[in-house]
Each structure stands twice: as C-alpha cells, then as structure tokens.
Image (cartoon, rainbow, N blue to C red):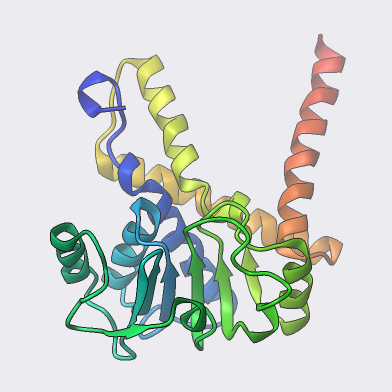
Length: 241
C-alpha cells in the first residue's frame, strides 16, 4: 500500500532486489563475479525491470530483454535506465535504438551466465530446456520451469535458484511492512534493504547447505527446509501447548 497509509519504503523494488542478492550469492558459489556477467531477463514489468536495473548498477551486463510484444539484444550490454525511459514513452521495449530486435523464443536460448525468467509460468519446458545455455537460472516468476525441464537442467549442471527463494524479496518486504505497521514506526529505505539482504543471504546459504547435505537439487532443498521448519515448530507447540 502507499507509504502515506502505512506502506513500506523499498517495497516496489524488493522482488527485483532479492533476485539481485541471490544472483550475487550464486555467482560467488560458482567462483564468478558480477562484472561483465551476461544476463538475459524475460519480463520487463516491476520484477524484471528492477532486477535488471539493480544488476546493471552492480556491473552485470544485461544483454537481452524479452517482453510479450518482442525482444531486444545487445551483446555489449543494454542501458536499462534508457530502456525504461523508452518503454515509458512508447509503452513497449521494441524500437529501442541501442539494441537490435530479436526473436523472443530464440533469445531465451542465447548463451549467458544468468537467465532470469520473470514473466509467467511454464516458460522452460521439456521442449526447450536442453537448449538453454546458461550457468544460473534465477526464477523471478512463479513456476517458470516445469518439473520435466527441472530434471533436464539438473543433468546439464545448471544452478537453479528456485522461485520460492529467488522471488521472495517481495513477500519478505511485505512482512516488513506488517512489522512496521504493528510497531507504528517506519524504517528508512536503507534499513529495509539491509534487513532484506540479511534474510535473503541467510535463506540462500541454508538452501545450498541443505542441498549439499541431502544430495538434492536446490528446489527440493528449499521445500525440505520449509517443511522441516514447520514440522519442528508444530512439534514444539505440541510440547508447550
């Protein structure tokens, strides 16, 4: 909700910021650095545009953007702020002079270090998963990867950051909003961002640790961790009820 009636600062960018935070962690996990890392983003709405802008500011190279009405590509990197201005004027990413037009389906399969599907569900399926050329798949949307595609990506060695973790920045900051409303005290945006990073980093580390401990992929590890926490809490309530 609006800040004037109890909303939280930083909420608009929160989902995109969370994506950037876990991508930072994934790169470190793989021994890579943000500088020059090639990124393709599917979806340039609130989630995708903020993720792209924040990643570009950190040195990532956004080489492709895909939208419902078309796609653009520039191997040298896209000026995300300029693209946002173009989209605000034309209501489309197409026609952006600093990048060439591309086929959306083909751009999804273009080589990059990070692919961010931040549009809608079922975008990576058994039909195209074997042709995905990315090191990291950061699921900004809910359910962008089908179960069969997940298996293919695992065989290819793609590091998947599952949606339940990757796009959790938004709901986490909505929780912060609830906390602030309950307190009747509202945080500076820098405090919101600092608290968000702390939670996202710890969540990422916990998921990776679970995946390694139980020899499962990151998605299964995230589910296991969530269920274990709920089960443990229910057990405690049984003891102290």
